[in-house]
Length: 273
Ligand SMILES: Nc1ncnc2c1ncn2[C@@H]1O[C@H](COP(=O)(O)OP(=O)(O)OP(=O)(O)O)[C@@H](O)[C@H]1O
Image (cartoon, rainbow, N blue to C red; front, top):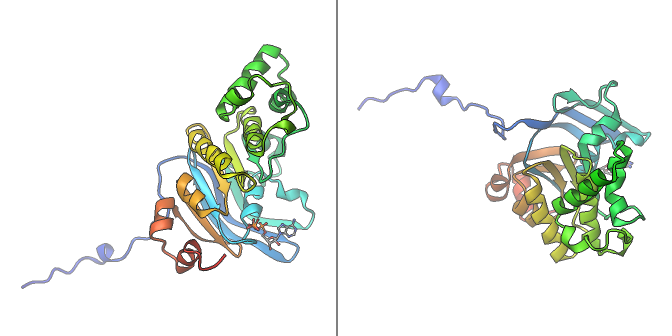
C-alpha cells in the first residue's frame, strides 16, 4: 500500500479570521486600548463588526463591556482620566481622528441606555426633539417622523392617542421603546444598546428583543447584555470579554454550542461571572 504524502501547504492549518462574512463592516477596531488613569480597561481589542447584524457583547462585571460600547460613539472621552490608543474605524474613517466631529458621529450612531431616560416632555416632543435640532421645522414632516419612529419602535398603537401626554406617565418598557423611537428619529446607521432590558419586566424584555430582531433589517445593532439567553436568542455574533480583552468572537451559535476557549465555556456554563 502506498501512502500519499500531502504537500505541506495542505497539511498546515490555514489561520482564518474567527468571523468570516461578506457583509460590509460598520466598525473595525484595531489594537484598541483604553486606560482610566492607570487602570488598563480595554486591551488590544480587534473586532470587525458587520452591518445589519446584532452583535452581543458579553462578559462578567467589570470586564469592559460598557467602556467598549461607550468608546464606539466617543462618549468615554468626556472622562478626563481616559487615554486611548489604536483605531476605531467607523465606515472607513477613524473616529479618533481630530478631523472627525463628534456631532457628526452621533447623528450616525444612536445609543439606548440601561435605564430608560426619556426627556420630561410629551411623547411627541421626545421624538421630534432630535429632528428639530437637525433643522426640521415643518409640522407635517415632524408628524410623519414621529409616527414612523414610533411604529419602528413597535409602540405606535399604544401611544397614538396620547402623544401630548408626558412620557414619564408610560411604563418602563414603554419608556424604553420611546427611547428607541427617539433614536430612530435621527435615522442612525448603528444603534448601541447598553443592557437595554435589565430594568424591564419579562414581557417588556420580550418586546424589546423582538424589536431588536426587526430593527437589524435596517440598522446595525451592538448590544451589551448580562443575560446570556438574551445574547443567544437575539444576536448573530457574540464577543466574550474578560478583564478588558476579547477572549472569543464568533457566530453566536458557535460561541454557545462549541466555544473554542475554555474560559468562554466556563463563563457561558455559569462557572464564573
Ligand atoms: N468612569 C470610570 N472611571 C474610572 N474607571 C472606570 C470608569 N468606568 C469604568 N471603570 C473601570 O473600568 C473597568 C471596566 O468597567 P466597565 O463598566 O466597562 O465594565 P462592564 O463590563 O460594563 O461592567 P458591568 O457589567 O458591571 O456594567 C472596571 O475596572 C471599572 O472599574
